[in-house]
Image (tube, rainbow, N blue to C red; front, side, top):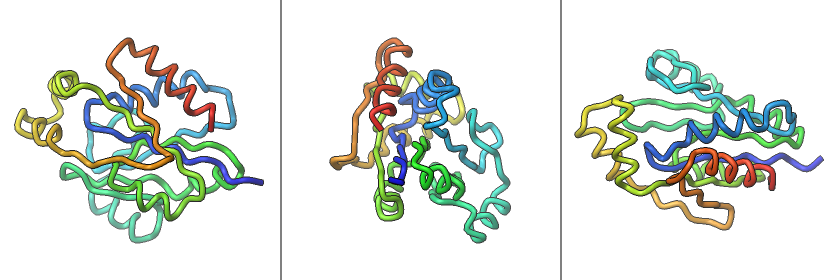
Length: 178
């Protein structure tokens, strides 16, 4: 059986990655070909699909090898569980919200990768970050200045600057192409 595809959903803070992933999850509900990976994060006010972990517990889990991918961003630690390997081995598609900084590592570890780079104009990103009010304005500006280039034949760009249902439909089309 051919390995499944690991879809890495990346992009700047405020681009709408979680919103699009949640919408795609609802659209694809009941289709066993798609698995939406959870994520552990050392933040108590985590996004849907994330599991909050204390920093010491996260580090212990990382040392045990419980994560397939880990990264640090904005003072927090994130990890995608190692158990994503099972559905990939079964030929299924796994969708994971990750940092752009782990793309190179993921390409080395997993045989089939597709990157969905979600983005939006800077004014919209700024507006969305302010609206969610997770951090002070200075930290929001630091998030907006952080850029990591995303390149490769396996990258698809999705601009999330219009009606959310249009962006969700675009994401689902990308996922269905596997």
